[in-house]
Length: 209
Image (tube, rainbow, N blue to C red; front, top):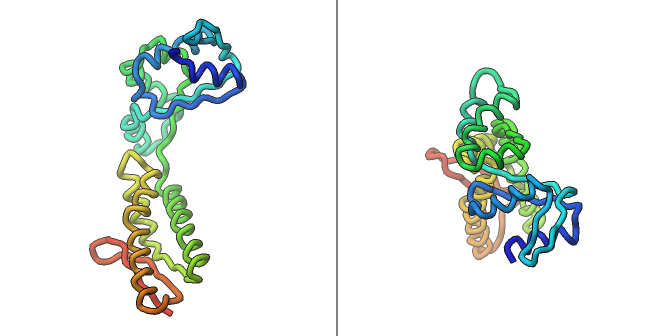
């Protein structure tokens, strides 16, 4: 019945964490179900059984008002969480029923800083170097400009840090794989790969012994 999957899971494990990611995309009927959970602490399944949600923690994530948060965070003074909450509440009330929002605890997230983004990019690219060493005994050197550029590209889009994997998997890894396969077919692999940027800002690979 309606809500059966959720109610059965919570019935079996009442001390649970339920995550609704990008909840703004959910059907309004789904939110009506959770209004019952937030209001009464319980939910009935399709067979009429009442399931207790009082020991269940529900997290809802959303990109609503991300532009508001971004705009405030770019100011000279870092806004406090209460200021952000007050600023985004009208946007939430416009999308969801105010009675539903009133039963939530709003926790605004600050945008990832450029420095933090660089650390994430460095970590992800470092994993590529680990794979090269493990699979081909090949050293890996990265120009810091690469880290800066990828981090900058990720701070310019809403997907943020998630865009790192898209850039590396869609652009860098295929380029590295193609070059390695070409050199293997020619009889051998160099001992070191240097990753940089060409004049147009694209990834540039340099192989050396």
